Image (tube, rainbow, N blue to C red; front, side, top):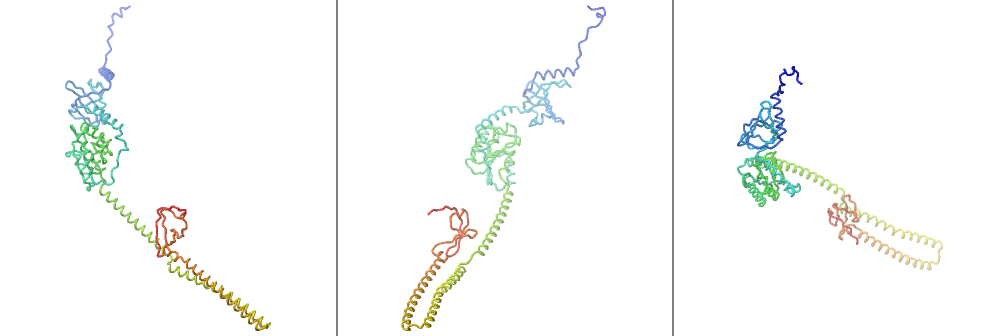
Length: 453
């Protein structure tokens, strides 16, 4: 029940909202109502502020909307938009509260149509990868010494001038063969593949470069076609792909044996600089000369060592003659000693006989008989000794190493000079010294197989 006092009060006023609060609520409402979405349009009024933020208008034939892309997102865009570019942006619909302007905050930007092309790129990459076209085992190494380089690119391309400049600077000895083909436009992929197949069929180069300069994904799309990838994989020589800039990646890069960041880098990978080869050859020549001198010095030293250890055949024969003379003297002494002993006995008998003075005639006859028997025995004994001496001399002659060598035998010694008597003492790749009747020879053993006779 209202009192008279209450009836006199004015009605309560509705709450008053500030403009800032209104704009903040509208911004929150827009952001909740429109999640991040892709929007396509044309760039207009593009401005890059000193802070690094991008401000532009996105428009189509009937409408436009203000857009902002802050520096933290703009640095990952990959390109700088220009007036009139067709783009697709992933943006959040919001409101700029300070002015109350409806706008979109761009999180990502790409050229129009790139999304579909990129999806096609991924599908083809997965397909060819599943077929093993990109397997590392299929990659072929580059030749150590490249004598000729083939280039598949457009004759008007700036990439060709960069490649030729790099090759003339680094490896002027390399022969260059150009296989011309358009690098973009309708049907460029088929023509690039045909050029690669021509180079593969002719096989007149050691390495093939497939190159072009940088550009948009549309410009590089010819190198994302399956026909180009298969031509690279089937090429008879190693292929280096140098397509676009360092950040550009194409299907050709995966199919090639080696990817270069740029066409110039591809030329540098294809041929080792001539100065490096000359320096390497000079170093190898110096090493070879040093090794040869070392081998010759060791051979001379070994020859001197063998010369000191080697006894000449004439000296050895002279030594054996001295030994034979000593044996002959000893044998003669051994034969004369019994004769002398018998003579001594005979003299004793004569003395005893003279003392006893037996019957002279009988004793004389007996003595004559004894003399005859002694003479006969002595002659027989001397003949036997002479025969034994002749046999020993013949045996000594047979045992003469020179005579054995003259019959075709040989003396085999190892590196230490030890005489070898069994195959078990011989090892493969061993150097042996063989003494023959007319000299010595050194032999290398290829293999040893014992024979049981």
